[in-house]
Image (cartoon, rainbow, N blue to C red; front, side, top):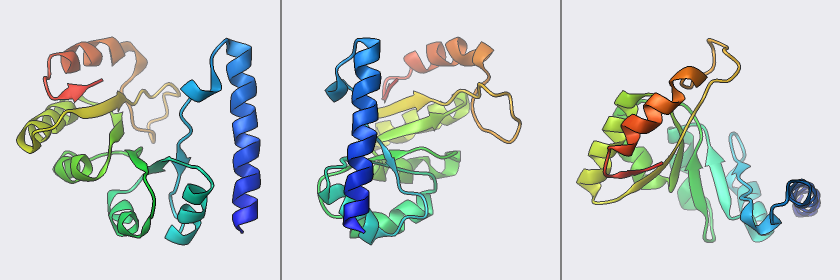
Length: 157
């Protein structure tokens, strides 16, 4: 199975390199995040051994169960919808939260990050499809949300 992971990783990195070249960027400036939703720790460890350094998880509880079993230096990204009551746990266990979609969530993350004495790295989640089943701020409100977040001292957007 490790060979399959290595082959896929080589293929994905080649696509990244081609896209980077086409857009005038350097491949090493592009971060590959391997999403580990429903992937068992053994397979995650194989990917890490093959050079994957960034892992993305959708569900907090699933990630908390896996993280102690994953070996090697990795950077965890929270990529799923985050409820405000889980903000502190997310800050304690993830390097980057990619799914901030409201001012209230940003304020809670800022408050919790301040309590933890840290600066939290976040990304805004924008719902570009307009699907109601998808999370994210609507594109027209993105700039307003970004401006509101820029005033929060413990968040790095």
